[in-house]
Image (cartoon, rainbow, N blue to C red):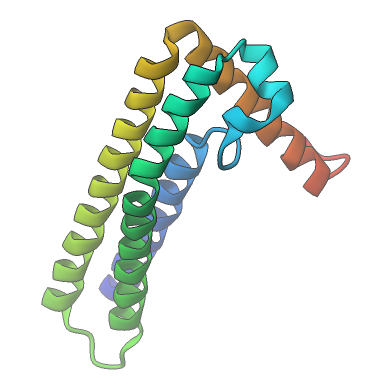
Length: 147
């Protein structure tokens, strides 16, 4: 029973953290290079070049950190799936997973802070609203007729 509670808690934490990271995403990839979005935000060529630099500087690190989170999550699942449960190993792996998620959150926040500094608060808010609309449209396209 205790093992099921631990497994359930681990799985819930994994799902919640994945949604938090996903919810903070802006439009896909180099959204500032999509003409409709760039025009709507009145981005200058200088703005776009600065965003390109920020993106390039952070993308490998963010990818590596996402990979670390996934590796730690899979390792935790492996430990939980073993016939002979090693609680200490599970908690140690949970700590690694937690630390890797924190590192990803911090790097993601740094990225968004850099983007906000580059384009200013107003354009940043507009970009976040555009991202929200894009996510809602994707959700509707994947589940027509459902809210």
